[in-house]
Figure 1 (tube, rainbow, N blue to C red):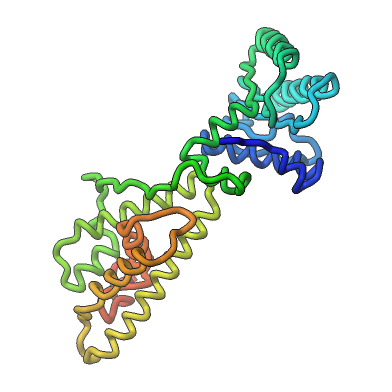
Figure 2 (figure 1 turned 60 degrees about the vertical axis):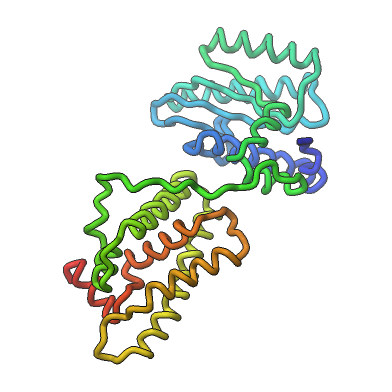
Length: 314
């Protein structure tokens, strides 16, 4: 993989390239540490582009980006020292403990520059008790080759061929203590006469894991796509619900063909549709529909809304 940041400068200009590289650093840190957060300059940024820890009297690890692509001389060294000094000063003023400071640059250093960094960072670490790290071009090449970094590569280096084809999340077994029997989607299935429910529980549980993981990692585009999938599935269910209620006598609350009809259509859509921004299995897709049922927006009998209302004590 040949990673380079020159297109940042070409596409966005000098000021835009600095901002683009800062965003890239934040996104890369979050791949490794999903709890990482950015700091917006307002007007200062406390010497922080991304951090992990607590700014409320806790221990904090900081990443600071410097878009030094074309030169690394005395002005750049002075800027690095100034950023580190500001990070120390902010930590002292705001009463949190700076325990690690990582400099992020888009290039590899030559011999004399690397020697300067080694001497300065070693002395700073000894004087201040702060662990010092350098993320250079070689480090970013290694990080971007990881499967979890596929989305960051696509966003910031769309001209590069993907290293890893994204894979669907693994199917996790339902824990014994999951306590799904009391949920609405299970009741809706029982109301429709279903007796074997292990697969439905597995579907729901794994869809919940996906939604929770996306929310925890702050993966907004994927979370939006997953919500969109649920909307599409509800639309499929609604179309088939209307069809089956139309061909069934009004006095009949059971719609025996509805559930297999909808699930078969989900299977066919999975086999023929283009991949989402992230791949899912059929189990996850069906689980997303079970989430719709759990929300009370779908069901498997004619009076599913009454079932939902009764289940919630209404």
